Image (cartoon, rainbow over all chains, first blue to last red; front, side, top):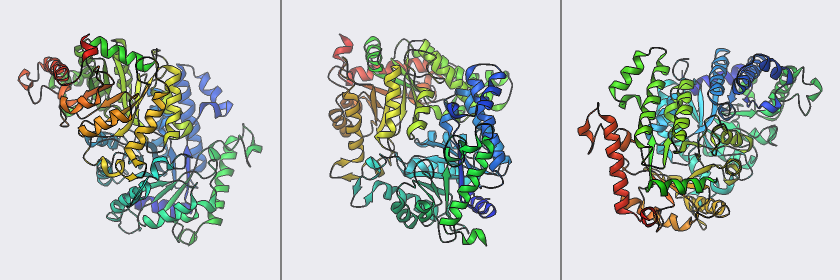
Length: 312
Length: 312
């Protein structure tokens, strides 16, 4: 089944566009998890990787029945070397086995056969053996040009996977190059049109293609504009929660049915025990904090965005 | 010692700006190497990773005394999963132990603490234990903005490593977003100025800072222009050899001393046994083909570029 169809079904089944980012950071892990990993012994990176894996797997257990997808951040696993990426591989696998869509956030990009190698490393449809780091979708960087995205697009079509192209990012300096403007529009608008062209050609029933776009929630007006520029493009919206965006900021990214976008929260959910509304659970009950924060995000999205298709 | 100083010394010592790209591709490996790896048994990815590692290590043995640096391409190792990146780790280590500068070509880029995690994964100065995939430099993507490059810049300064920012790439469609032009110039020119600003502030004796730029050899006029826009920025020039560029195309990237740039050739050297001037060595004598191709590239560069400092 195509990525867009699987994603669509998952969002409808879970009745929410909430996406949980798996960004394990050693310094923020609950003490009990670190102690357990340390007790197992071995080299430093292996201890940390073991803790990262358990942390992510336990989050997956908490959220799997309530959200459509998770987004593991490759950087934190790579930081631990081969032991870390081995943990990433197992986290991807475990999440997919629990029925979650896995969007591997690795922001890859390169030319020709090199792009093809990246695509083969990460993109898998429903086949667990289609790629070593088998994920349902991968984030990619468009700076080098649409021709360099093509090997990713081809591989995704071949195996039933998806992509999310960086269009407009949520960092303070995102405008520096993304807003450079010629007669044909700003860079991010030109990237958006290129992505729309690819996904429009792939649409097959859900209204959306398999090539999505990353559009930050920190610029609500642009989100609405880009939703219109890219009517066939599924969006991935970072910036909700700890980066400052709220549910009304992301509303413009979803269509009138409450579909067409997934909204990411990472720290606000996985480290909910540390600060904010759910800190009262404390470090020992960190999974309950994850659970409560997930419910709160689902409710916040349901209140502030269109959800007709989801409640139907 | 700073990256720019170590790179400078290595170029002067080896009397060449030639950089060899380590892009192992299973389909192109010499049969004898594949057979040996297969004889060792084990899972498919491990067999391939073993062959990639031996292939790269034998190339390193051939070229280590004659070139300043190698550029392993992360994608080909990632394509083999954890076994592949383990091989990348060992290839980086072996090359550094042989006195080569290692530029890990991974084109990473992300925001804030995620960028920091990538930097910690790859950037190491002279300390072999400073990063799990310890390399002397890393290629990075500027699309998200200069603020997202800063964690890489900070980490590089801290540990004596370097960076190469994608400015102008060598693929046919590189102009699509890189040439979008506002009053302040084209995107790639604006990226170039941002990189120059960072590296100019770091210059300490060699004329160059530690933050370099990737500028394709397929646009010789732009290479000359960008050399002028970025007087303090060490260049990494891909596109020589199999991508169509020749030594006179890259000449504009080097300064009058023959310094300030390294010129990459991957397939033209590592798979020299397969086609071109050195195919006569044949598959069994593939290392002699690597050796002859390396010498030919050194000679080609020496003939067509300024080399006063190198011959002094």
